[in-house]
Image 1 (tube, rainbow, N blue to C red):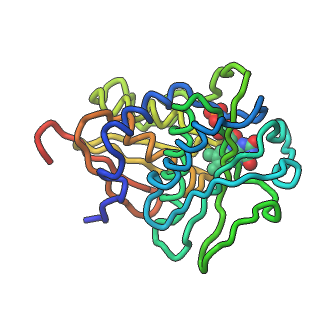
Image 2: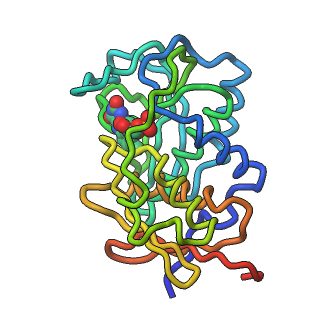
Length: 252
Ligand SMILES: Cc1cc2nc3c(=O)[nH]c(=O)nc-3n(C[C@H](O)[C@H](O)[C@H](O)COP(=O)(O)O)c2cc1C
């Protein structure tokens, strides 16, 4: 039997409800109109402390934008806010990168529920981060946040049937909802490197192509949130299979 994921039972029902509501409103914001006010900022300091899984630290910092953000093809560089959270992982932890994806996305969804914009940034100037790291720690990504004026642009997403082995319309509703929630997840370069299949009350999450463990951690949090209040257990798998999620009506 594969190892249970630390995500099981980690977030409270109230947090999960809040995160799930935020999933539908989240989109990457790169042009900000200002910084989070002190009340929202202190809510985020609190969130940063409590949403991080073992092996992960989320540290809120200020930066000078031009020293941290790069201009990438097709997307503007982040501007308009100096506030960001660094996603720091202890690389000696066996699930460091997955846990970093889960924890960072939980932080993103907390910020979205405060009506703030966010964007995962994997490509940044490392020299612009001034946080003292402990042995084995690395900054895997940064997440700027702040206020914004722009409207949500329509999501560029693969069809559900393109990221699932069978037609998810034939699956139980919880599995369908979980797959749809993964579909809304952010991923580096919008690769959407996920694949899901359903059999024996179990939804399997598989990595496709150039996806990273960070991407897959984010997807796994979304998969779990999509299940809603239904009791479920997540186990790590091996190889291309990242994790399985078992849900059934009777008590597990
Ligand atoms: C791990 C990760 C790294 C990312 N790195 C960058 C980045 O360096 N620069 C950037 O502009 N966007 C970055 N993004 C944002 C993605 O481009 C974005 O999530 C994707 O295009 C989907 O759009 P959406 O977030 O609006 O749904 C990253 C996203 C993830 C999950």
